[in-house]
Image (tube, rainbow, N blue to C red; front, side, top):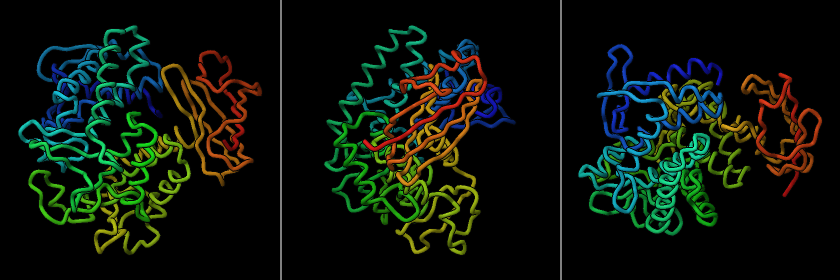
Length: 423
């Protein structure tokens, strides 16, 4: 984080728009101090996401004791805001444990799957599981064993239901409608496979290895393009009132089959986590605006910034980009590069070094500031490996590849030397 103080202030301000029951406004407007309550199922979960990321970077536990108002009534500590967000998400699930999709989730255009309150989001189950798991280290730090046990139990419930109910043979379903019909199944002629359910099954840790392999391979087979990964395939060419706006978007554009860069970046992350570094780097390279915009007359937007989406081969204007600057892609691509490719992995306890590089990278150097220390990293890869560490030295001393507590170093500059090999 370049400016931790600014991030801290933004987090505290954003929490003011959470309700006492743990739900939130979908967005807020600074000038009017108000916002929209849209009932998107994923929105509350980004609260703990932001808090945990801030803590992983800064270890500023004092923020957890700050008192922040709720939007409707009363106030609570930041820690209470975090717990309420996840407890609300857990409460907003069906009897079998899948989150209700309500008016949509991260994909805003899946807005008519659950108008009666029965529709379920499979991606939302994976995201909720990911967020529960992401908090366990903090719960241990606070000795909050009751919450830890409660959330671990629900994590296990999510693992069970997603693998018993949501597996379609070669990939995971995307959702279930109010009437119980699935979304994102091979049995349909359109909208057979959605990217988010595949990537987050891996990111969350819920997919067994064999299913993770199949889900990501199916994603490459059906959703892969020269510009990244499509969000859904085949694009909808007929309106489906029980799914929503997605089926009214132009095929191959926006959420209806475009290479939606934000979602495509998650494929990179999932591939690295699953051990397929070469595929991850291939997609990373294809998605870079400088490469996507090689045919600038068709691409049409700036070659130095990510667009929201690039038109897929499902439309005649294939490779045309749109909505530049309007995307969360940049930060995800940056964090994937910093945390997972270069390998500066942070947590509450400290920093771990875990490069995941393409085999043709023989050496690279990188620098990073973390909790007041400057790390100078050199990675050598003489055998053309990806991520297997043969040797790790810190300030010239061989060490085990475990979490490094930066507080144990008196010096401000720390050298890290890694030699990679093949498995």
